[in-house]
Image (cartoon, rainbow, N blue to C red; front, side):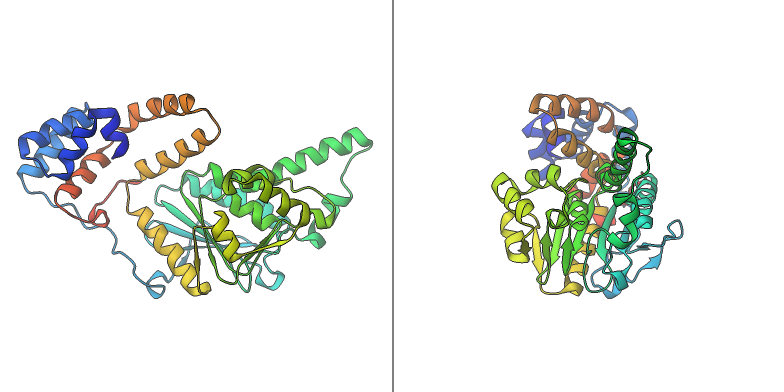
Length: 349
């Protein structure tokens, strides 16, 4: 609503929404929110006829109620994707016997998985976690050694060219999370090492358990992290000095330091409470307008990489079309009638 109040009618409109104005004022408010005649007439019909929105999916309140079923469209070797609610998907790194080390299948399947999720009109939020005793041990050196240590090519130029293509593909494995318009929440327990840090750095929100620890491990195996940590972590932590220390030494960052430094938002006592909180947050996000949430993610990422003026200009171009959504009418009415947004049915996106 902040964007609506500033761009459409100023602070006065926002105050009117909170104070539940009379019907005549509501019609003027609807006109201010959007020039769409259809939206104004819809709001009028709803208010005059006392229309009540159809109930959406029941809110889930416990880990037991989040019992998941295998997502039919997702069948992978290294990942397990389950439906943890009407609009929430849970993606698990699923090689617990290998501490969720990232093998060849993983680097390929993550791209396929999140490209599908990005196009799934039912999904509105995603949780990523690790099966077993830890989040991820990072790259599976045994499986990947051939690609890394014996790259193809007849001479140094061709070897370099092939390595460049290989590294670009690996980078896309995590960039695809950032490109996905659905908010992605990382739930970390146990070790999050090397490629695990690259992965969570591309997520939108990070929670962890008290036993979690984080390690930028690459210097210990003779290379510089090359798939996202060095580019994203400084923006997340806000301290180049701390990032330098972590990357130069490969020391462990424990959960309490991760919280105080801003790497994670919250720390939970154990894995079970962590997952319940992460899935609960995803459920809360999924109750909002998908037009609003996904538009917010896209604009946050754009503004991160551009100037304030460029970000505002992009926002103007974005909302000149998105403000015409019926989701505004539904959200405003729910606010006026003091109803939870979970009771509102938003169309798929």
